[in-house]
Amino acid sequence: MYNEKNCYSIHGLPVLQDNIVWILVRANEALVVDPSVAKPVEEWLHRKNLNLIGILQTHHHEDHIGGTEGLLNSWPNAEIVASKTDLKRIPFQTKSVVDMDELLIMGCHVKVLEVAGHTSTHLAYFIQSQKDVSSNPLLFCGDTLFSAGCGRIFEGTIEQLYKSIQLLNELPKETKVYCAHEYTESNLRWALTIKPNDKSINSRLIEVEKRRSKGLLSLPSSLEEERKINLFIRAKNIEEFANLRLKKDSWRG
Image 1 (cartoon, rainbow, N blue to C red):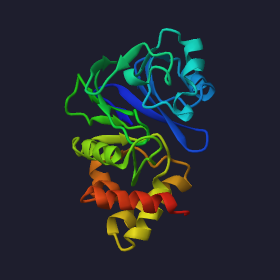
Image 2: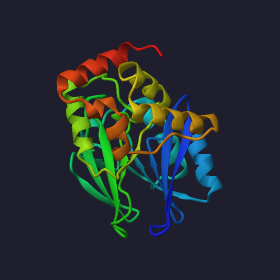
Image 3: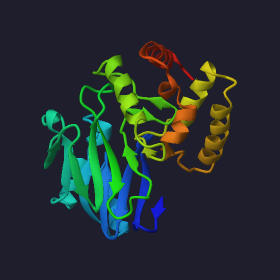
Image 4: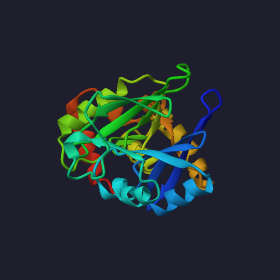
């Protein structure tokens, strides 16, 4: 994605089996979200002659923080933003944050949102440009919200996850959603087992299949799109939400 007015771009770097490391670039500076591993991110940044100024960490799982230490070897002054309540599990923090904290990074207004459920402590980062308020806001949501899906519950509760999805759904519909995994095609196939005649889900699956067949990412999505295709966002109450999560957990597609 390239925003001419803001002069920033966002790049998705596929790593491991299905992780996506998102890199926001403005001029010669870069901000990385959840570096799973260091080497491919480091090589990409060096190839673009970029200076890593910061890393946003959503939660403590190794496939989200595994590359942080390695990147600090090359950019020791990079700011590491992570949850203050997870100091032991997310090391190297230089900026420890809590829910509703607000930061200014690379000319962007960053709001911290606590979205527990997948893990007991999980952050999302809602970003708006200071220079052009008309540009689309960005949401880096880690493993809480996926396109056409949501995260599994490892440490949190179904109540927490439901509340977190509801919170994210309150953001503006034009918000671009940058999930941490390429799960869209699989999630849509599962959704069709629940709603086989849903036109929006069927249409989106065709579109995603075409993109993936060309080696392209299905992401980012948008909240407007997710409100059409994401059954977890569409759930009318926590009982329906919990039932969907149980069905998704047992699905072997």
